[in-house]
Length: 307
Image (cartoon, rainbow, N blue to C red; front, side, top):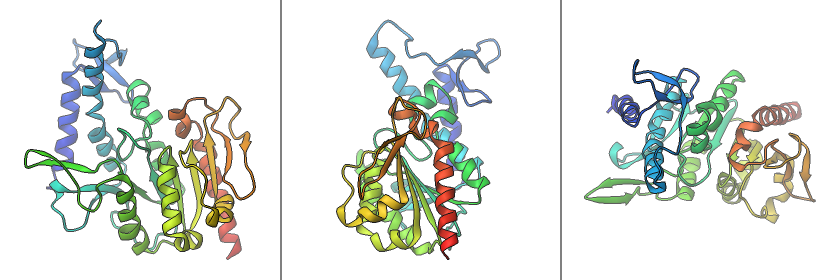
């Protein structure tokens, strides 16, 4: 089974070529130059035919290849898969990515939590990967910056909840939805590894998943999670019992026409909101990355100075 990830990524790249595309060295999806068989200069185009249904089918066929290509890039950047739930056959399980391959007493751990929908591990926005570049829509810039700053990494995969066998799609037992996935990962990987200090970056519905963990594991969060950076999170109102904690450790970079980091709103015992420097939801993680890491590092410095 060890060769499975590489084989799947190669198959995805070949399938992408069948649809006429490949990623160039800059991570931009380009149309294949028929003369060379390599990525040319022309970028991806949604409108391949006059039929809207055919255009959408073409887009979905291209989009289906993205997860395995991103998984391969995560592994090339030093991360490894851990299959969950533990003890289940790989073909009936999902996986998360981490660096090191087995987390243990991390001095600094960064957890990346994507939103809902079609994104999987390593992605913030699939549409940006396809229409702009891998760095615009994937989590790879966050991975590289975290590595530079000395963080261990855990990348969740909360939308990967089913497997096809016995002639149908079946829920993966124990991680059959995004909330169950996060609960399993937190209780079976993060907490048992006994990290010294934990930071989280959560986009969109990842905010709701994060707040669910805060509510169910508040003692661990208050002791170990020193920074939570949301990017245009869907979260509702923070739980009253954790309002003081969240107002101290969390900030949400929201879609806004205001300049980056301009305060948008904060009331007593609520999460501070600042502009992500972009008006579109899917761009907020990319647009705010420098500010997010500055925030996390400042919170870490505050934590270490208290000790």
